[in-house]
Image (spheres, each protein chain N blue to C red):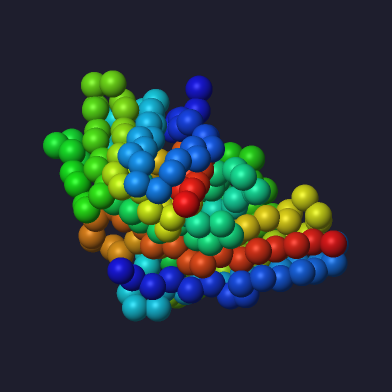
Length: 110
Length: 116
Protein backbone atom coordinates (compact mmCIF):
# COMPACT_ATOMS: atom_id res chain seq x y z
CA UNK A 1 0.00 0.00 0.00
CA UNK A 2 1.28 3.45 -0.89
CA UNK A 3 1.95 5.80 1.99
CA UNK A 4 -0.21 8.49 0.45
CA UNK A 5 -2.87 7.60 -2.11
CA UNK A 6 -4.80 9.92 -4.37
CA UNK A 7 -7.15 9.48 -7.26
CA UNK A 8 -4.96 10.50 -10.23
CA UNK A 9 -7.88 11.81 -12.24
CA UNK A 10 -7.90 13.57 -14.57
CA UNK A 11 -10.80 15.69 -13.44
CA UNK A 12 -12.21 17.82 -16.25
CA UNK A 13 -14.79 20.29 -14.95
CA UNK A 14 -16.49 23.39 -16.34
CA UNK A 15 -15.76 26.82 -14.98
CA UNK A 16 -17.78 27.51 -11.88
CA UNK A 17 -18.07 23.88 -10.86
CA UNK A 18 -17.28 22.52 -7.43
CA UNK A 19 -14.74 19.72 -7.33
CA UNK A 20 -13.46 17.56 -4.48
CA UNK A 21 -10.25 15.63 -4.17
CA UNK A 22 -9.61 12.87 -1.68
CA UNK A 23 -6.49 11.44 -0.20
CA UNK A 24 -5.70 8.65 2.27
CA UNK A 25 -2.52 8.06 4.21
CA UNK A 26 -1.23 4.89 5.81
CA UNK A 27 0.86 6.13 8.73
CA UNK A 28 -1.47 6.83 11.63
CA UNK A 29 1.33 8.70 13.43
CA UNK A 30 1.55 11.34 10.71
CA UNK A 31 1.73 14.78 12.16
CA UNK A 32 0.98 17.38 9.55
CA UNK A 33 -0.81 17.56 6.26
CA UNK A 34 -0.78 19.83 3.26
CA UNK A 35 -2.17 20.37 -0.17
CA UNK A 36 0.35 21.56 -2.73
CA UNK A 37 -0.34 22.68 -6.25
CA UNK A 38 2.00 21.89 -9.11
CA UNK A 39 1.73 23.45 -12.54
CA UNK A 40 3.19 21.66 -15.53
CA UNK A 41 7.00 21.64 -15.46
CA UNK A 42 7.09 23.78 -12.33
CA UNK A 43 7.88 23.19 -8.70
CA UNK A 44 5.14 22.42 -6.14
CA UNK A 45 3.76 25.37 -4.25
CA UNK A 46 1.92 25.23 -0.96
CA UNK A 47 -1.80 25.73 -1.40
CA UNK A 48 -2.82 25.24 2.20
CA UNK A 49 -2.09 23.33 5.36
CA UNK A 50 -4.78 20.99 6.64
CA UNK A 51 -5.91 21.20 10.25
CA UNK A 52 -7.98 18.77 12.28
CA UNK A 53 -10.76 21.30 12.67
CA UNK A 54 -10.91 21.88 8.93
CA UNK A 55 -9.90 25.13 7.35
CA UNK A 56 -10.95 27.38 4.55
CA UNK A 57 -9.07 29.81 2.36
CA UNK A 58 -11.33 31.61 -0.05
CA UNK A 59 -12.73 29.07 -2.49
CA UNK A 60 -10.64 26.25 -1.02
CA UNK A 61 -11.67 24.10 1.93
CA UNK A 62 -9.52 21.38 3.43
CA UNK A 63 -10.66 18.67 5.82
CA UNK A 64 -8.79 16.09 7.86
CA UNK A 65 -10.23 12.95 9.41
CA UNK A 66 -7.55 11.36 11.57
CA UNK A 67 -9.71 8.37 12.51
CA UNK A 68 -10.16 7.44 8.85
CA UNK A 69 -6.73 8.76 7.82
CA UNK A 70 -8.40 10.78 5.12
CA UNK A 71 -7.80 14.26 3.76
CA UNK A 72 -9.93 16.21 1.34
CA UNK A 73 -9.76 19.39 -0.69
CA UNK A 74 -12.86 21.15 -2.00
CA UNK A 75 -12.63 23.82 -4.66
CA UNK A 76 -15.72 25.95 -5.21
CA UNK A 77 -16.47 28.15 -8.21
CA UNK A 78 -13.58 26.70 -10.24
CA UNK A 79 -11.51 29.09 -12.33
CA UNK A 80 -9.48 28.33 -15.44
CA UNK A 81 -6.40 29.19 -13.42
CA UNK A 82 -7.14 26.36 -11.01
CA UNK A 83 -6.02 23.88 -13.68
CA UNK A 84 -3.02 22.10 -12.19
CA UNK A 85 -2.01 18.94 -10.39
CA UNK A 86 -2.94 18.88 -6.72
CA UNK A 87 -0.62 16.99 -4.43
CA UNK A 88 -1.65 15.58 -1.09
CA UNK A 89 1.36 15.78 1.20
CA UNK A 90 1.91 14.21 4.59
CA UNK A 91 4.63 14.71 7.14
CA UNK A 92 5.12 11.32 8.73
CA UNK A 93 6.88 12.99 11.61
CA UNK A 94 10.52 12.26 10.99
CA UNK A 95 12.96 15.10 10.51
CA UNK A 96 10.55 17.23 8.49
CA UNK A 97 10.50 14.90 5.50
CA UNK A 98 7.39 15.03 3.37
CA UNK A 99 5.64 12.18 1.60
CA UNK A 100 3.85 13.11 -1.58
CA UNK A 101 0.84 11.55 -3.18
CA UNK A 102 1.01 11.00 -6.91
CA UNK A 103 -1.23 13.99 -7.52
CA UNK A 104 -4.67 14.60 -8.96
CA UNK A 105 -4.82 16.40 -12.27
CA UNK A 106 -7.50 19.05 -12.65
CA UNK A 107 -8.47 20.79 -15.86
CA UNK A 108 -11.07 23.55 -15.68
CA UNK A 109 -12.73 24.03 -19.03
CA UNK A 110 -14.20 27.30 -20.36
CA UNK B 1 7.31 32.88 1.77
CA UNK B 2 10.97 31.98 1.80
CA UNK B 3 12.90 31.80 -1.47
CA UNK B 4 14.88 28.83 -2.73
CA UNK B 5 16.77 28.98 -6.01
CA UNK B 6 18.24 26.26 -8.18
CA UNK B 7 20.84 26.41 -10.88
CA UNK B 8 20.84 25.49 -13.67
CA UNK B 9 17.18 25.37 -14.58
CA UNK B 10 17.85 23.13 -17.52
CA UNK B 11 20.81 21.04 -18.57
CA UNK B 12 21.46 18.71 -21.47
CA UNK B 13 24.53 16.55 -21.29
CA UNK B 14 26.14 13.56 -22.91
CA UNK B 15 26.02 10.14 -21.34
CA UNK B 16 28.95 9.56 -19.00
CA UNK B 17 29.42 13.16 -17.91
CA UNK B 18 28.76 14.56 -14.44
CA UNK B 19 26.27 17.31 -13.74
CA UNK B 20 26.19 19.54 -10.67
CA UNK B 21 22.96 21.16 -9.50
CA UNK B 22 22.98 23.90 -6.90
CA UNK B 23 20.24 24.67 -4.40
CA UNK B 24 20.35 27.91 -2.45
CA UNK B 25 18.18 29.36 0.27
CA UNK B 26 18.23 33.07 -0.52
CA UNK B 27 16.70 34.71 2.52
CA UNK B 28 17.10 32.18 5.29
CA UNK B 29 19.56 29.62 6.56
CA UNK B 30 18.70 25.99 6.07
CA UNK B 31 20.39 23.33 8.13
CA UNK B 32 18.45 20.73 6.18
CA UNK B 33 17.58 20.59 2.52
CA UNK B 34 15.85 17.86 0.59
CA UNK B 35 16.45 16.55 -2.92
CA UNK B 36 13.60 15.09 -4.93
CA UNK B 37 13.29 13.56 -8.36
CA UNK B 38 10.16 13.58 -10.46
CA UNK B 39 9.59 11.57 -13.61
CA UNK B 40 6.89 12.63 -16.09
CA UNK B 41 3.39 12.22 -14.72
CA UNK B 42 4.77 10.77 -11.49
CA UNK B 43 4.97 12.08 -7.97
CA UNK B 44 7.98 13.62 -6.32
CA UNK B 45 10.23 11.00 -4.81
CA UNK B 46 12.59 11.95 -2.01
CA UNK B 47 16.14 11.02 -2.92
CA UNK B 48 18.07 12.27 0.05
CA UNK B 49 18.16 14.64 2.99
CA UNK B 50 21.08 17.03 2.93
CA UNK B 51 22.46 18.04 6.32
CA UNK B 52 24.76 21.02 6.72
CA UNK B 53 28.17 19.94 7.89
CA UNK B 54 27.47 16.21 7.83
CA UNK B 55 26.75 13.37 5.46
CA UNK B 56 23.51 13.24 3.56
CA UNK B 57 20.90 10.64 4.38
CA UNK B 58 19.86 8.69 1.30
CA UNK B 59 16.53 6.99 0.71
CA UNK B 60 16.44 3.30 -0.01
CA UNK B 61 17.40 2.52 -3.56
CA UNK B 62 19.26 5.78 -4.18
CA UNK B 63 22.95 5.24 -4.91
CA UNK B 64 25.00 7.61 -2.81
CA UNK B 65 28.06 7.18 -5.02
CA UNK B 66 26.07 8.21 -8.05
CA UNK B 67 24.20 11.11 -6.51
CA UNK B 68 26.77 13.05 -4.51
CA UNK B 69 25.39 15.59 -2.10
CA UNK B 70 27.38 18.32 -0.42
CA UNK B 71 25.90 20.80 2.05
CA UNK B 72 28.90 22.94 2.83
CA UNK B 73 27.10 26.02 4.09
CA UNK B 74 23.78 26.99 5.62
CA UNK B 75 22.54 28.36 2.31
CA UNK B 76 23.90 25.95 -0.28
CA UNK B 77 23.47 22.30 -1.08
CA UNK B 78 24.72 20.67 -4.26
CA UNK B 79 23.68 17.48 -5.99
CA UNK B 80 26.12 15.98 -8.47
CA UNK B 81 24.85 13.30 -10.82
CA UNK B 82 27.98 11.35 -11.67
CA UNK B 83 28.43 9.42 -14.91
CA UNK B 84 24.94 10.36 -16.01
CA UNK B 85 22.93 7.99 -18.16
CA UNK B 86 19.72 8.56 -20.12
CA UNK B 87 17.67 6.93 -17.35
CA UNK B 88 18.84 9.72 -15.03
CA UNK B 89 16.93 12.22 -17.16
CA UNK B 90 14.37 13.72 -14.83
CA UNK B 91 13.18 16.82 -13.02
CA UNK B 92 15.29 17.38 -9.90
CA UNK B 93 13.84 19.63 -7.21
CA UNK B 94 15.29 20.75 -3.92
CA UNK B 95 13.45 22.10 -0.92
CA UNK B 96 14.21 23.59 2.44
CA UNK B 97 12.32 24.60 5.53
CA UNK B 98 13.02 27.41 7.92
CA UNK B 99 14.52 25.99 11.11
CA UNK B 100 12.30 26.27 14.15
CA UNK B 101 9.14 27.09 12.22
CA UNK B 102 6.15 25.15 10.96
CA UNK B 103 6.63 22.25 8.65
CA UNK B 104 6.10 23.96 5.32
CA UNK B 105 8.83 23.31 2.82
CA UNK B 106 9.83 25.80 0.16
CA UNK B 107 10.78 24.38 -3.17
CA UNK B 108 13.32 25.50 -5.70
CA UNK B 109 12.13 25.92 -9.29
CA UNK B 110 13.66 22.61 -10.30
CA UNK B 111 16.32 21.49 -12.75
CA UNK B 112 15.36 19.56 -15.83
CA UNK B 113 18.14 17.16 -16.74
CA UNK B 114 18.29 15.49 -20.12
CA UNK B 115 21.04 12.95 -20.71
CA UNK B 116 21.60 12.08 -24.35
